[in-house]
View 1: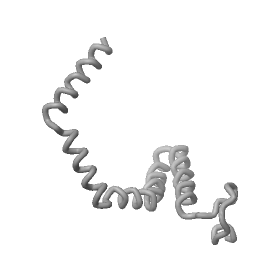
View 2: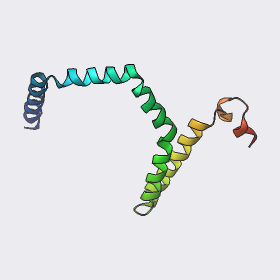
View 3: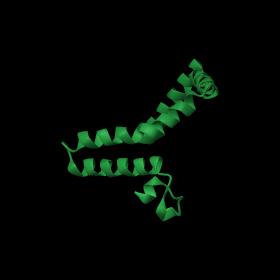
View 4: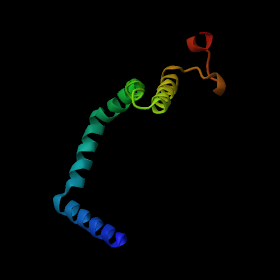
Length: 101
């Protein structure tokens, strides 16, 4: 029964997408944003400031679950180290301020 429902839902979604030309509009807007450099800017800001968002999420999660908060805190620390520190001693990285710290 679940298989039949999946097929019906898939068919309905395909019918809606074919009739609205939504996918062509999305692809056109994505290409326009990529050409203007917006996608690269979004990726850059996500790479640079995403760790802060995870750290804030960790702080908020400590009230609910200490394990989840600790996990998010560790993830944000790893994120910050990977993004900001060009010296990775375990990977044979270059000498920098984070190595001499």
